[in-house]
Length: 262
Image (cartoon, rainbow, N blue to C red):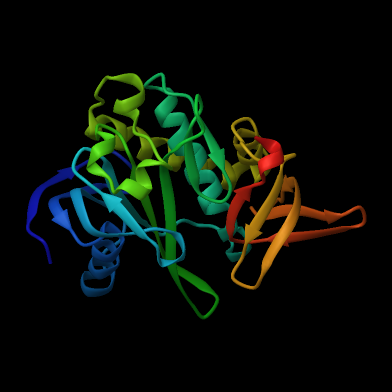
């Protein structure tokens, strides 16, 4: 396991420890290793760099110094039917945290954080977990945000698709403060889900949504779908209208906005 730089105790019922590293392969990988080997839960892994960061669908996630690369290892009290809402409520929490720094993001289902002014990607979420005997053992919420980086720290191909907060605003943000605010906001999102159900979380998402009403192609594990995004369902699925009389609900997939919307 990578060398630990610092361990911090924070005031949270949600996750009370933060483990800080200079470099890890993947914060999600380290988080799962700690859970499995130490039987520990309720902590955050954060690193200055990742050498093998993970994105959705097994894609590589470039993670140079200056970004926020973190994973929350938690055991929330939620129904298994609500697991599809975890990326939704996590994205809402991240968006609200960024807004406290006067940064206005948009959200793209299922897990992308976009810079509002140019719709370029500044971050994403990777949720992993373990279920045994119909019980949630744990969740790991991986968070990657391009914060104090410069665009030349990324590969040429990625430079065309993403941006960073520093590139757009020319100011740096305290990463620890941002991380603690994200933890606080995601904790609040889980609490609201528990108390009020999914409606208020979905309303928060829709206030920041970037694709409802748009014609898209969704590349899902089963097949590609083409249609208009009609809604986000009560359990976090994308509702895609593929004809006048037919809709499909998708739990995951890559959304490509069709050119007629641009």
